[in-house]
Image 1 (cartoon, rainbow, N blue to C red):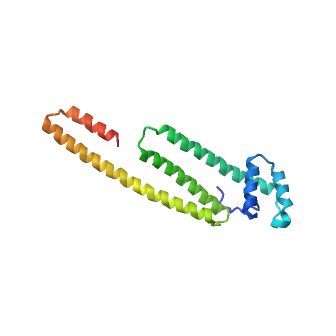
Image 2: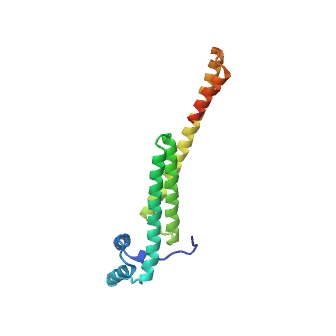
Image 3: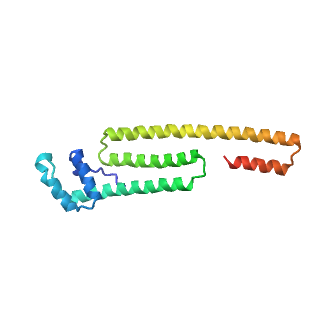
Length: 180
């Protein structure tokens, strides 16, 4: 990623026009057609753009859109592959994916001049919530691990008192640790 800040003329347009440009990009309109459409409103918006400016903006926008599509597919694959795994592992994987997307969003905002809007503030709040949930998840896993270790010790002690052989105790211990 370039350290150069991006100052897209398209982003100087009112938000509803930028949204319309995004829709046109996703439906396959040409950069020249989009530039012509924007320039028809130049008197009202005060912004004229070249088809190259639309192309640069479109390349970046469509690239980010593709990253989101890939992230969605990854999330779907995580869910499919982890149907039988503990919910904490799925949540952790989903959180990691969300953190990655949020970080990319924040970096993109920085590339666009560091403009902080309401959506970016909400994104930063979401990142903080994800971090808090990550800490809680780690506490839960540690607590679970500690309880399992305590249970294993109790099972070993009771097993020895009841005369279970070392092989059976080892098998039970393996099974308990296998669910961690």
